[in-house]
Image (cartoon, rainbow over all chains, first blue to last red; front, side, top):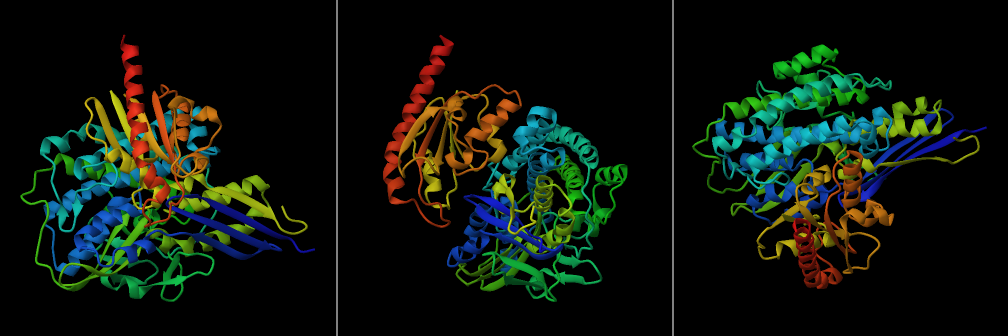
Length: 437
Length: 156
């Protein structure tokens, strides 16, 4: 008798996106694993054509309510490359500080509100809050601090307005930025507690040999800047401008989003695990100590364990932000300018959930001729499907509800930026044949 | 203090209606106008420390352009879910549920919703919702007046 089971995940529709996951297992063998997502950046690639290049950071910020700074920063860097602009070190520090704010608010949201309920056995953070009020309050507090840092530097707590081509339109006063110092210091302590908390969570078993891809940013743990992109497995370092030759996007018939793989078809992983693998020694010493304390290796092969990596990066973002705030002096210029010219430029930065790559061609009058945006979720999508395929056989021995939760929990491990609706995943297992679950 | 909080996305069809309506209001003494966009859990912060007039686009349950005003605290009691009530995750109902679960005080104020029809990316406001904007602004001003009246009674 044939035993065929269909595991189906519907990503509930919100304004930002929709998607579906289908896993089909026949006689213990995975025959299909498909993650279908709607992907906003594709619309933006067409929408940006003909616009002034100076509008691009503001417009691309609207792609995502959780990581607008990542879109602003990658687009600004690509356009600066096209124009030949080089921001000063003072401007780079301002950019790093505001990007730390985004890492803090995004990682806090994911660790506490989206992913922790899976580990603690709750449908959502709302249900979890009834039994674990302190944990949820801590998450909200940390997220608020990240948003406050963004507001001070960017003018608004979400969709900030100051990031622009060349830097930030305005630098805050020393007093304005230092006002958040104590809050960041408290956040650093609480983020260390967070590492200890999530490291105790029971981890489902799954081991994957990943090809990790992450930005290289000089001697720094990569956040706001990618000088190049490094791949694991002896695959070397790729210039940012050449990433579209190393990475290939294909249209998957089941999805209206493009899926990226390496040129030879190998899926790869970007995001916290990739950054840690390539750059663990560049973490702030406090974050490195936290890694050691909980026994986290630099190569994390279990995707479920990404919650611990994300918590370590939360520590790093707080420690970096605190140091930047304490050393802050108002720069002479908050942005650099130069003459318009026709050109092509690519730029990359590390969004909280991974490598975000932009490429623009601009004309001599400063209008956008073409735009290409490759977000981290598009790059991770093929890897997510491969991991779900690897997980499939182990689900068959599990009770129906537990199996669905396990698959859903895996999808969340990658912090997919399908939209803010990710935590409203509705997962169903549908028996399709006799003998099915 | 009264705080008007508008939710929505400016690049998703009718989803921008609340933002447009609140942006068009002239400054009002003692009233803070917040274009919150899609704040997620940060919506909780906007609901604290003030009497709130929360303005959002209702995805299902209202005809395009239809306007509803109701007590903020009573939203959840109507048995509606955020998914069917609003175009945003952690919308008003979930924010109220989270606040309650955390033992925070019940937010005070009113919800003003307008029905939307199309939420396609890149689309502008649909005709039905566009025509309703003057009425939505009026509903918001009435909600502000009601909130102010309630505050004055509390202080009396």
